[in-house]
Length: 636
Image (cartoon, rainbow, N blue to C red):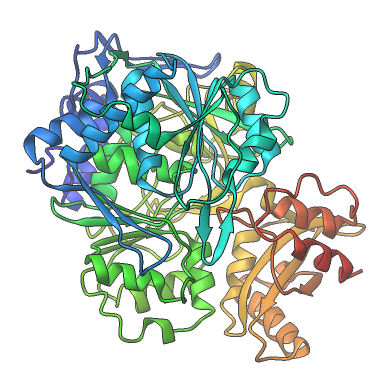
């Protein structure tokens, strides 16, 4: 098997990019031909960025699971589709072939139908990283139900907010999960979210850790019992034919206000785009074992653990645990155990593992790795170099991918081993992606060696269509700031060769005495110091400069704070210039992080500004206790 749309040379990339810009409709139609359609589209694209309205493959009929499962169950039934590595390394994992995964998806699709779920219904999924999570989302897609996956660590209030906003009628969950050695009770979070709830008529609970939980009579049923009812029956596949623009899923992402936005992705264009980018960015070859360390509760897991790899007939590894249990060598053990060829993880994970040094890597072969990737935020130079040297053994190209929940799939990235990899640069746009940089007034910055706000001037198939139940919010957030463009909210620079470097959220670009300073750039300079484990830099109001920089820094304990202060200031001076030196540096034991590993800079900004009693919701933090400690030792 090969992929007719895989670009394996620099020249092929350049030619594909040229075609995708000169005739986007013809280009994407050619890619889309490689998928399973029940009826071909009547028209490739209709769009305007004013309303906004974006429609791809209009009139096309399909079910995404036929591209993800059925075709491979026929062509390669015994190829592993999903490999599951459990939290406890002593527990046996599971491998599901394409044939077995299809059977389980059809089986659970029947369970959903038997429990009253129909096409168009919204289903909330609050589950850990077990195969049943992937089975649940694919079963929803099979019957045309819209899945709304909530990361299995969010609070009851966060679950409730998402259920209410999307008007879900069914929740899928488990009794609990272990994270390391700590048991987490997921079912009680669901119960607390559903107090006085009248919308939810069924909760289906998968028994995973056999914990003692409360089941509400008439509402709650066991997953295993519902499946057992089907034994001995000849199942009728309840697959639904979907329109290309029918909703596939809602996924909530934080906004500038406290209320999360329900980003909506549809079926046809999303399928085509994420599979195209998966195959090309990672240069996936049949037989490769691909390991994305993300949680399926986030968009990376949707696109690059489940839908993208499966639609490409790939073998996708999903991991239930954490990278430091039972020790900081867990990722490397998994790579060796399953002979992983492609590893895709986050800079936060890389930096946290760097803190343990190279000792956990000793005795690990890692020789199977061919490609290593980064996702979630700009990767700083020190982390990039450590990853390349110690994990990739200087033999693996690093793909530093830039994209967002709203984008569906990767927009800017190196193609592994095909286009040049440049440390800290996402590099070039994928075919079909037309980025522009604009200044604060919306003026397009032409040529190279420029920096500005990153926008996209033409639609790509995987982009969001709306925000659920509030299309005006979609327009205001993404299309109103710079009329005629999709605004990413990120800043970027374009170098002399047209390569893009993401400088972080525009909110995180601070104007200090007229100098625009990207906080990610300052963090990178600070993190280069051997004594620094991690840092976060935010802006705060300054009487003279307008804004100044406040840095929160974690040290490894082998240096005095006084010496660290001198080294950090010297490094920022050297890397960027004296104007970028933080006015305040606070040494901390930890940084407030979401359960996906992202630093909650909103909280750090508030503390830097002195707004100690107005920090907003901290229930979704992995480590809320660090907030009090940071507040108590704030630098005045």
